[in-house]
Length: 385
Image (cartoon, rainbow, N blue to C red; front, side, top):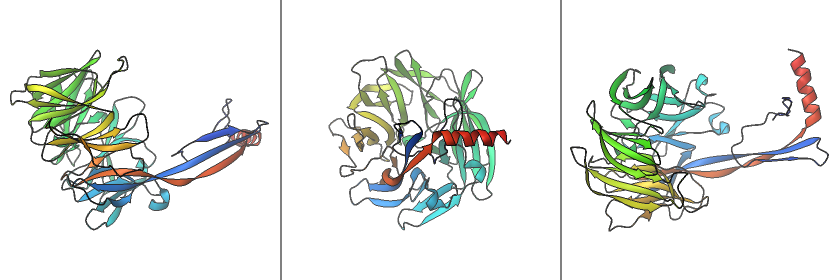
């Protein structure tokens, strides 16, 4: 907390919950609250049944077999001040904490993904503007290696998941062009495809050698498809912004989330399904399913439906919504009994569970600051250096 003249008057813990600040009537004191919101990783069985509270923290990713879930815990009382990842075995509930190198603790992360071996993590650092540094971390040797400074986004593999076999796919900027690279556990990069056109948010979905990506054109988004190193062709164009894009596990179709543009009036969110031929053409008419505000799109393993996170109206209430491909079937909520707040959903690759970070209030602290005295102490401290 600083005055307008640049004097620091208080340093309080990071705000992770509701913030309240008020001056005293005479203007000499400042009152501030800080609150802590922790979360529990709750596993919701997709076939019905009682949810399981697996561990604390925010889920990051699943193991490829769906038997373990990785989560990050921001509560230093749990991690004893250390930074790292909890890996919890679903069936037994046994968790193991893996400490990351201390040099990674102070950084902010835009995204993280674990390779199939469970030993190597790719961490995309958050910066004010793209592109972003991409780091490779070995949890056994605790070695950190910078892979590239030009990363934009993780591409998604069949179903909407970031991992692809033993490699992880990353969209990178190379001068004025954009490229898709595969990164392995040694940090070696392999060029997969160079895009003729690609714009923010750099959505790229991959299924084998098939690639789909979106390109913003005016108030519409165009989806292109190609094969690695092949000729790109236009699949379809939709009004609005495509914010999620993924191939079905079977590879016969794409699903996407479309949100209205800021310039549109009365627009709505939609989940769209489009069947794609082997020649990269749309087969039949794309299906649009209207939703409320929606994100986090993933396919079910059988390619018969997708799950999304939907905020119901202008509220703080969210739900995991299952939307079938078959138009004769209605969307259903997988979390009808969940009353707590959650803002993400992470389905397991085997389709058995959906992990949601359920928020829990961890208490609050009221701070009182004598502004004049604190500013004076700060100026005296600065003059000593």
